[in-house]
Image 1 (cartoon, helix red, strand yellow):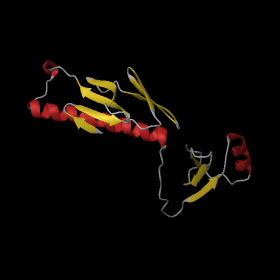
Image 2 (cartoon, rainbow, N blue to C red; image 1 turned 90 degrees about the horizontal axis):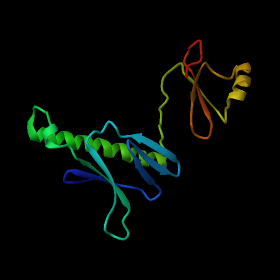
Image 3 (cartoon, rainbow, N blue to C red; image 1 turned 90 degrees about the vertical axis):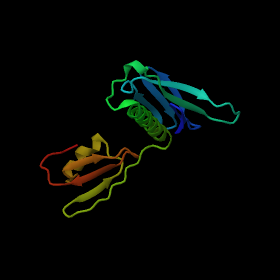
Length: 164
């Protein structure tokens, strides 16, 4: 993200296509579509722009268009401008995370530590063969589903019922 005056510019990656239909910003990428509701960002304008250079990528421009008469902050104009930039930065980080999600996907790494925990990775576990796993007592009491390649991570933490 790049700050230009009262505006923040976020570059759009090559494999991403962006559409803005108020109040939603749609990011289309190789891994799917991300819809982000921007209605909480009041008084912020969104503009899809291209730089003047021939080889440059399109970008999103976020700018504050709050009229001066609507400011009612007690801390004066310096605080007012800081709050505007804070909201613009929040919005740019949100959109950059959306771009990351539709291009590379999200990944969460967990470190499994502690005593008394049993972990088991079942490959391609579906609802149909969960019943078969329960009969074999191979399914432990708590199930966490991983969204990668249909594998299921199973954890036994001592609950008497299944927790999702």
